[in-house]
Amino acid sequence: MSHHHAGPRSGRLRAAWTLALLTTICAELTFTAVAVPLTWLLLPLLMVMYGAGVLLLREAAARTGAGWPSLVLLGLAYQLAEDGLGLQALTSPQMYGAAEWGWRALGVNWSYWVSQIGVHVVFSVLIPIALTDLLFPAHRGRPYLHTRGLFACGALALAGVCGLRFVISATEDPGYRTPGAWTAGFILAIVALAATALYVLPGRATPEPAPAATAPRPVTAGLCSALATIVFLGLLLPPGLGPDAVFGDRVARWLPVTAAVLVALGFGYAFLRWRGAANWAGRHRVWLVGGLLVGHTVFMMPASRSTALTGAITIALEVVLLVALARYLRAGTVIEQ
Image (cartoon, rainbow, N blue to C red; front, top):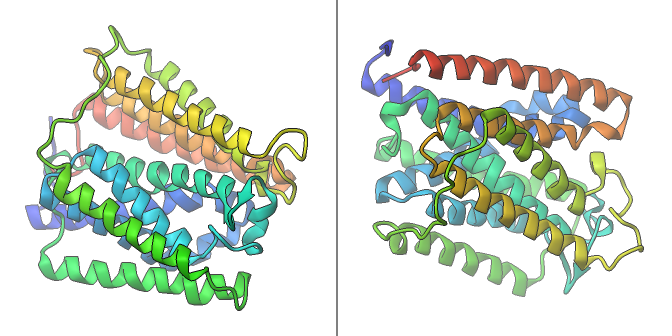
């Protein structure tokens, strides 16, 4: 049985605020905040940086009838805007020490870049949108905002990118400027990705692998997603984002990047097969998302004893909230119709 608590307009706005908050929590507060708890104090700023941007691309996708392939492409564009144009971390030789973490070539931090593709496409975009759809199923695929709200969201998203550039980047790597050729390349790529996502893909059939005969049990899906997350990040970044390269000089630095891409593609292929199975349900999605989030947090825990404790508390909160969501789904109860 579904419970109605507010009118349609209220439901749309609640869904929009929920998405903005979930984007910030999933992307930063289950990851960076494990090592730097003061990140919680930046929640309002982070909601502008993350929430407005993801809400904007979700609104664009909803208005064009775009599906998950478009969201992936928009997530790639979002990552380029944030890390390439805003933070400038994709090319900076100093930012976060990312150049020392893995493969750097042609003036680009490739290990960092690939890791952030995974982080932003999955944790900034796909997971928050999926959770919001579960909480507000009546608004799935429908715009949350009117035109004025959309423009305001776009302005906030632009302000967020500028904040990254002129506050965080200027603080972490003062005076650095991304080479003009890479800046132009990032802008062209963002435009091409957005155009493909919003004008080419909508309405087209998306080729997917043959559905699995049966999906694994929800807990198995969750364990697989947690393991895939830890392995993916572990191939690209030092645990807890320490100062040393992942594998030192023991292996060619491009090899872990290649392995991480294969892990991501392999898990993505398995997920697409599972979700086509007849027994795939909401509880599977909750467990799978839970595994991704827990794996995301576990990766940060080895940095120190304090991060281990903070990570354990974060995981406990993740589990409690996701169990509550699973109970909502099992009872057929949603927050807003």
